[in-house]
Amino acid sequence: MEEEDIRKWEDLDIDVLVKIFQILDLSELTSGLAHICSTWRHAACDPMLWQTLDLSMMSSNFIKIPLEPYVYVNARSDKQLTKLLKISLNLSRGSIKTLIFNFNLYVCDAQLTYTAERCPNLKRLVLPAWNRIKKTGICKAISMWKDLESLTMPSIVNPPYFMEEVSKHCKKFSELKIMGPCDILFVQTLIRCVPNLKVLSLRCSTVYLDALLLILDGLKNLEVLNISHCLIVDAQPPPATRKLVEKLDDSVLEKGSRLKEFFTCMDDSCTMCEITRRDEGLIRWYRYEEGLWKQDEVKSLAV
Amino acid sequence: MSQTVVLEQNAVETQSITLKFDGCSSDANPSPIVNPENQSITIKFDDQASNHHTIPVSIPNVDSETEAAVNEFLRKHGSSDEESVRTDAMNDLWSFIERQEIGTVVVLVKFASDVKNFELLEIFCQRVADVIAKKTVEEVREIFNIANDFTPEEEQAIRDEHRWAFED
Figure (cartoon, rainbow over the protein chains, first blue to last red):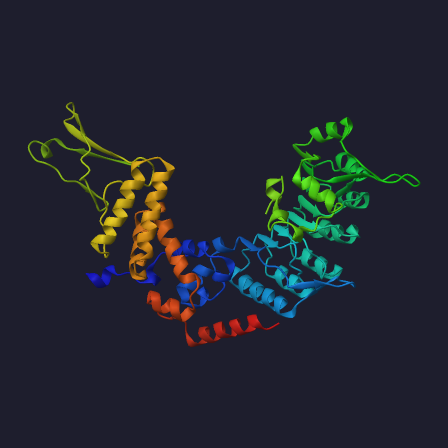
């Protein structure tokens, strides 16, 4: 009687094992559970565990340097990331739909390509730091993500090369968050390349007034716009100097009200507004509490 | 979740009835509802919320102290809608579980899964997760008495995978 009743672990529902594994964090999950026995390996590869790969607790050990790419990442720190990526991507078996990198995790081209190849079903990417990624690297990665719908990226100097790749490969693309200044070139590129864009967040960055007006007029399918805590800059031609817009005028508000959701906050007493002002429109997230960069008034873009 | 039992006429004249469903006994003594028209008696067990078993359960393969602790949790947790009472019940059970050996927790996980009690399952799974989180492969196998059932080829592949993960 006792022998039958005493269950061995292998007899436990895989579902229960998966439930236990769901409690563990990424480093615990990748520490060897898949090596215990074949049942545990099977459970460790369960798609339920790998819908999201969240690396936002990892930072690169880096220093700033005066030459491109302006950061130098310690080799050991790089190897650690590579190891974690290799094990996670191996266990994930292509299940990953959401991939999150920390704002100061400086991924290199090789790591990005390796990851992209193993996440063919990716729907959402949060990649705030492109310092070590070359144009060829990011374009190659984008070409492998046909199902990409949502992207969080830094501001880039030359948007067209990138947005054209998105336009070519990511037919379902609909959500964008830019963590940095947004100018008229960027908006023109968005209108040309991703006219179906539904959701755009520019929070906590510099937004030029002409760009803002073009967003409201030119992105015809936009439903949600977030310009909370932004520095809105009215760049006048010389000899006039640029000035900050303190209050949105009625025409802007009226156009904004036609959207499903229009998030604004330009408040002297707001902490985030103050932080954006202090950092002059490009926030140094490392100065502030961990996780602050993850917030967004748009729920689907919050991390 | 409520369970309804309807008894036929002949069964009820003079006898007392002990009912068992799903391994639970009917010590809780709910009031029967008599229907003279079809001469039936209906006994309804109403739980206060779904998935709560307020009737004492019997758990195979654990000692009486453990069974009592789980039943105390079920009783306390199911007895009130107040957050503080429920949290107390969970904390008490948690303290108890932390002191038990892992074999017992394994049995409890299986039990909780079988009876679909999600509160119990959460507590027991958390305990197991805590135990395995910081252990090596060998330690985990030893603690849970798990046999390594990989073939030599699979073992080699796993060792290779681990080594490759360290390389560039």
